[in-house]
Amino acid sequence: MRQYLDTLKTILNEGEDYDAQSERTGTGTRSIFGGLSFRHDLKNGYSFPLLTTKQVFWKTALYELLWFLSGSNDIRKLWLHRVKIWDGNYYSDFWQNNHFFEQFSVGKNYSTQWRNFHGVDQLVELIKNMKKDPFSRRHIVTMWNPPEVPKTALPPCPILYHFKINKNYELDMIMTQRSCDMFLGIPFNIANSAFLMMLVSDVLSLHARYLTIELHDAHIYLNHLNQVEEQLSRDPYPLPRVVVSTSGCSIPITDYHIGHFEVKNYVYHRKIEAPMAV
Image (cartoon, rainbow, N blue to C red; front, side, top):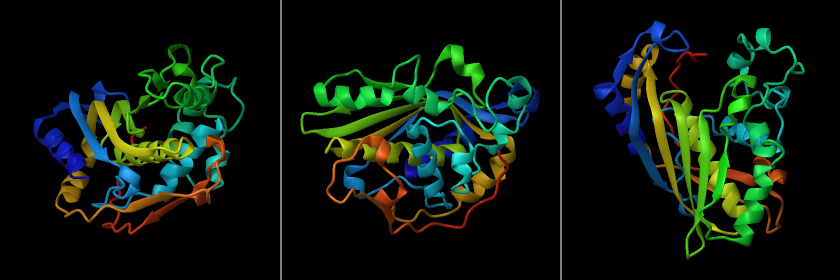
């Protein structure tokens, strides 16, 4: 994850400052728009991009991904696993302005766009098309649905996943993210994307290869600057390994659960507390 740490340094040293009045959360950011990305070699999960300079709760990232893939927008499904990362947005002014949603719904969120994008189940179509035409350049899942952006507790930050199978039947994926909370959010987004890539490769009996993360508005909140400095002072540990196993059985992508994933040798520095901007 040295690329991630180098990106933090670049934003600290070269980013533009936006004061509290000029950005949505009222917190203020230091940001760079465009030109930042990193690529990680994920072959067989032997080097999984889970940050080691602070603890990343990988089960939280995985539970969130499985929630997305299930098609549910019921926040109580996350609460069952003690996952609270959507609570700040759920209890914001979203509910004051959107009483037409059922209680405990986060609206037309990621799950809806994955499974019902104007009637299209993108997840089912993705797997079907990758089997039918593996070398196509059209294996894309998009999260940005303009008419429904105002109807979610938090508009999607990752907005596009683009998959490519090479001639050796290795799977590459590019995740494009429009808004990038570099200290709190991006470590989860990286892990979430890597889990997704390994899951899709397992469904299709492929080998996962390169995960590329493309960052649009990459920012550090101004009340995270000290935490970022502390993180950059730490030496990274070797990355862990992740194994996906379904005991030799082929199962649908929606049937995976957390017991199918094993994270091995995850060594990390202690967590660094920081407030989430909502």
